[in-house]
Structure formats: structure tokens, C-alpha cells
Image (cartoon, rainbow over all chains, first blue to last red; front, side, top):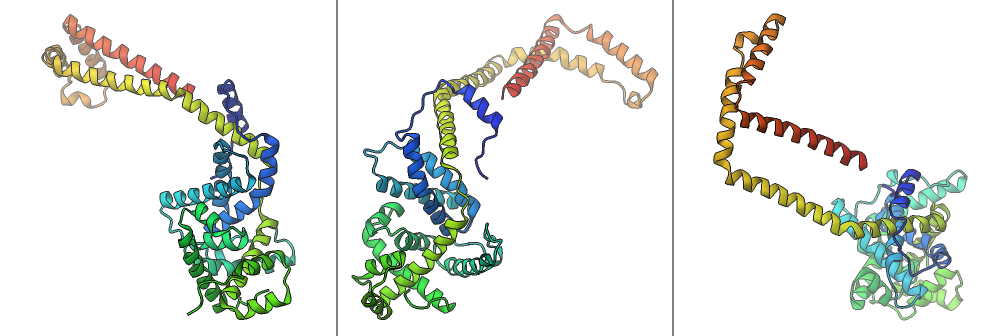
Length: 197
Length: 181
């Protein structure tokens, strides 16, 4: 799944295209700063929208590859972050379209991966929370998951969400309202909604 | 029906994300339906994000940069060799079309060439009884084939040899192409 290179492939590729000059707009230091700031949020977004950690790994990697090839009129970090999320969203849609997998079919709770760092007692609690919320997320449409994550986790404005998902700002308002209602109803039905804080 | 949204919703979301609530806002979020739902969604999803932040195995930025450069170089190389591969495919297509065209155009000549081969191969076919494995029969059969092959007309023999040589060349070409890939 992951587009990994072996050393020999890399050497072969390096020899074959050593003369090709391909430069990015961003230099390595700027990329590192940007990547450290955005990689985890992007991975979380892709993982929570798709319910598949391996897919989130792949799409995150591909999103950065594509972003680096884009020529931005100005190197605005916020704009680039939104653009990155837009690339990720489109890649996710493409994946669903081509794989013909039902996008709403998130992993069932028993199939949800054990937390990667679940060696201590905290891990079990984390796993339970993850299972519960995954069940709730499963009841939502893919677009609703994306909307909720962008609005309530990334803190994106309606305009930013509209740009990322490819909708009109007015549509975001009403879709977000519906998504939030569905989410809260499902959570309360499972006894997970306990006050605002 | 619940109201569509509340003006204070962004403040509530920000309070959930930062963990900094003031008493009045908390009181409002308890009684306002949209704010209550927004606070619930924001709280749960941010908890999930915290879990992900701790557990996600994100590749190092340096490794990602290196891979991105390799991918970009490969893409550039593919782009650079695109015209060559296009011309190659065009040449193959032209070759095949020419071959078919010549076959159609010279069909009468081809039939005339192949007629002696057909008749010779028909006469070379051993009687059914010789298909049983018997070393004496096989030896006599080879001898009779060699004798009858000598009776092929010169032009047909040339054609058979040409086809044989062509097949050997094709096999070599395929071998080299595969080994380069």
C-alpha cells in the first residue's frame, strides 16, 4: 500500500534522472516547519474521515507530494494548509470512487485497530473511547465527518470549509447544522453526551 | 424545531478547544441547543484528535522531503520521455498497419509462396501408424522429412528461412527489452 522505495530503486532512479532539474517552490527548511505543523492534523482528518489508518498514511504522503509541486502566488502558511486539506479531501474522494468501497463503511468497533501505543492501562480506555466514537462516526455520511472535523477540530471558518470540500458557503452552514445534529443525537443515544465541557 | 445556529457558537467551540471557559458562556452552552450540540461535537472530536496525536506514526519530515524529490524527479523523467514513448508506440502501430497492408496487397503472391509449403508439409505428415513411439520408425521418418524438405522450391525455402531468422531476432529483442526493464 505505502509507496515505499527500496534503496536499489532509489539508486537506479537517481542514476536515471540525475540530470533532471526539478525544484520545489518551498525549500527544505520551510517544508520541515510546515510539515511539522500540519502532518498530524492532516493524518487525523484523513483517518477520521476514512476510518482506515493505512489509507490515511498513503493519502497524507500523496497530499504532500502534490502540494510541493504547486506554485503558490504567495507562501501563506494558512492558505497552504487549507490547500493541503483540499488535496487530501479530493484524494479521499478519488479513492472511494475508484475502489468502489462504500465510503460509509468504517471499521466496526471490533475491527478497529488497537491503539498503536496501548501498552499501559490508559490504552484500554482510549480504545473504548475510540470504538464508541467510531460507531457514532459510522452513522454519519463521509461529507458530514469531514465537515465536523474541519469545523470543530481544525476550527476552520465556513468559507475555509467550503473551499476545502468544494461547496458553497451557504451549503456548508446548513450541512454543518445537520451533521452536528446527527452527531449529537447519536452520541446522546449512546449515553456519551454529558454537558458542554 | 431547533434554531439553525447561535451567534455564540464560535466562542463555545474556541472554549472547548482551548479549555478556557467563562461561567457565563458555560451557562449559555448548557441551555442553548445549537451551542450544546456544538460543544459536545467539539469536545468528543478533540478528544479523538488528542488520541491520534499521541498514537499517529508520522514519517520524519526529512524522509518525506527526500521521497517527494524522488517522486518529482521520476515524474519529470516520465514527462521528458513521453514524446519518445509516443513516437515508439506510433512506430509500432505503423509497422503493424504496414504489415497488414502488405499482406492484403500481396495476398495472391503470399498464397502462391505458401502453396508448395502446404503441399510439402502435407506429404511430410507421417501415416497415423508411425505416431507410436518406435525408434526405428522415428529414424526413418526424419530421413524421409529431410529428403522431402529438399524438394521445396527455392523461393519457399527462402521464405521459411527468413521467417525463422525473424523469429530468432524477435526473441532476442524481447529478451533485451525485458532485461533492461
